[in-house]
Length: 481
Image (cartoon, rainbow, N blue to C red):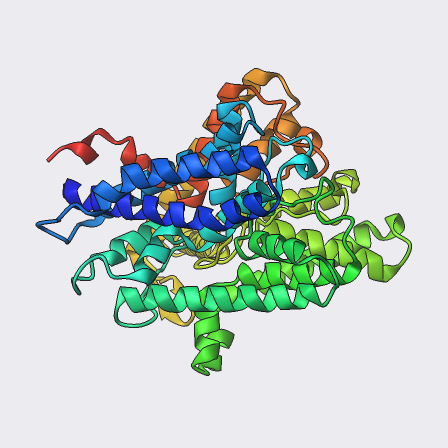
């Protein structure tokens, strides 16, 4: 285990987090929010005091293996989340430390679940910080570090970090060098972010609102700066947000293919076709089901499209109280929570590509039952999938549901309804945010006990990091030679 390299990377990440707190500090200074100013100043000082010495550590061996890559990612997200919650606690705006950690973890994992009962009472500096956490966590903290500078000298070890932090099944390099791949991803990410801010600005809303809404959309997080989420914004703002939620939950490789004019690869991509088909079918089904609840067809389609985009992208914004919808529509939304976004996007959930692989593997199992001696391979995008990938997806699904049901059992100690507990775990584990009943779009997670909040925090981290980086941290042999 290359401990020096691990400490060096963690130190760099702490310094980067300190730098990213500066805009929030400036907003707090401008608004004369003394508590928030103190919170950010103290946290920045602590991050630099602990991070700089580690970042300056000389590494004899700069390379690392897959195990170290998973450990770095798991530790990095724990450190970022813990320090990210300090401004809320030091400022006194969220007096309970576990609640501060919950809010921070929810921000960085792009979940959007909140313990705040009155979001609008929070200082603007802290509102900006919690929304920016979505943006930074959406593409990945380690991906940002790789975009700034390579960690190793052309050895390709950085691929272990990208594989551990990026969501999905197949994560290849867009260009030969990982540093260039990370930089390209962030260029696309920043470009789309700027475009959405411009579109929202045309809706004549304050720049602060446009920026924070975009951060939540780009990171598919869903932290809102209003108590009613997106309900009080104009139809134009809701439509723009709907479109960009779908865009940011699309595999970023698609945007790269568009940039290099490889349109055939986009059309050939089975995950993209399945993702768009699920969205269209869900919107149509919900629109028909809730048609009597709104004044016009246009309003019905708008709310239906917004909520489908919000849930499948795991953004978690709300344009209406969908907890009041018929059971059929709510059932579709819960199903979309589990399906989630595309691989290689900023969204959470199981991912459309895994659903496709499991469906194809199921078809093969039926074929083998009928034709025991037959040979049937699993194809994706016209290419044969390696058996190792199919097996890894099946293993992932088994571990996924084991952790899900274990978490569900643990949070039931609070005594809430099954609908509340089930959708709370589903929303946190899949990084969605709002659930149904007690954790619906007009409710929050403040009623859960400290124990349940810690369980849900772990669920958010497990879900965002796709299980294995967190599991490896707790695996005893990880730390043995």
